[in-house]
Each structure stands twice: as structure tokens, then as C-alpha cells.
Image (cartoon, rainbow, N blue to C red; front, side, top):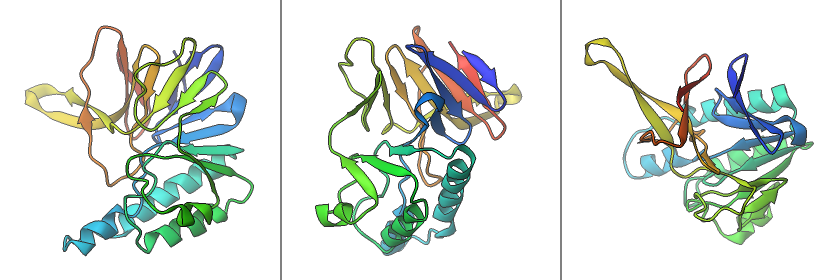
Length: 221
């Protein structure tokens, strides 16, 4: 593993993967950005149920994506599932308008369990929709972790919303998002601000890269 500026860099089959503190992966060789579990529009579903969640929480997600797009200028962006949270609401139109503003980027959605809109909505979107895992060089992109990953491939996925608990003095603790690598599978953190965390347990062959506001840190290896 290399450390460069505020990200950690791992290699797979000679290809660098940059683990960003912005909760995404940048692949310089492919000019490709990977993002998982944005869950855009989730706040509107909560409000519909009478729970007053403010919409600006999603605006922060869009601002974060915009900074990544402008900084890296990717040719392709793959959303690894759960881009939009469940049934349609007006925030879908906000998201589509945002993506169309970046017309030089090819957007892809590897569908997840929350990507349940009708084919009409996806057909009118600026995204290419993938219902099956995508093979990209020696990478296998999916939403849920793949149980049997072909030899030589690294499965990059989401779904779990991985996190880790850091313990301090006086029994103080904090939970942060993380990248979780185990053998031939890496689970990306949830990009969306309005998501929970599933605390991951260190295992003998796992590596956990914790995400702070300043950088990505190897916590367990």
C-alpha cells in the first residue's frame, strides 16, 4: 500500500486504485471513478412518512460529487448500486439534471436493491444501466459482494455501508466509514451522508482503511 496526500493507494494486477477520503475510488489508468450507495432522495421518503429530514443533506452529496468530477475529470463514473433510494420522488429530477450538466462523462449504474424505478425512468436517464456485474479490466463491479469471484479479479462492491469503531482514552469511541478489503473483495463506503454504518470486524486476512476528514488511514492489516 502507498500513501499519497490524503488517499491510500493499493494495487491489483499492476493497476493502482486510489482510496479517497471522499468515500470513492479513483482508477487513474482507466480514468474511472467508482461511487457506491448515494441513496439520493431518501430524505424525501422520510418526510413523506412524517419524519422531518432536511433536503440539504442531499445537496451536500451533490456538491461532493461535483468536486470529484471537477478535480479528476473522469471519462467514466460507475455508481455501484443504490444511487436513488427506492420509489420515485421529485429528487430524481434534481439528480438527473445534475448528471446531465456533466455531458462529457459516461455514467453507469450497476443496479442495487434500492434501484427499483421502472425502466422508463432509467431509459430517459443519462446513465447506462447494468443489471449484472460489470467486468472492467481485472475488476468485477457489483452492488452486493460476490461470493465466488473469478481468479485474478478483484470484486469492488458496496451495499454493506462498512464502518469501524475507533477507541480512545477514557472509553471514548468514534465510528467512521471505511474501505474493507478481504482477499479478492473490497467493499466501498456509502457515499451518501444520510446512511448508516455496519461495523466491520477485523479478520486475519482483512485490511481496514478508515476514513477521516483529512485522509484515509490503514487501521488493520
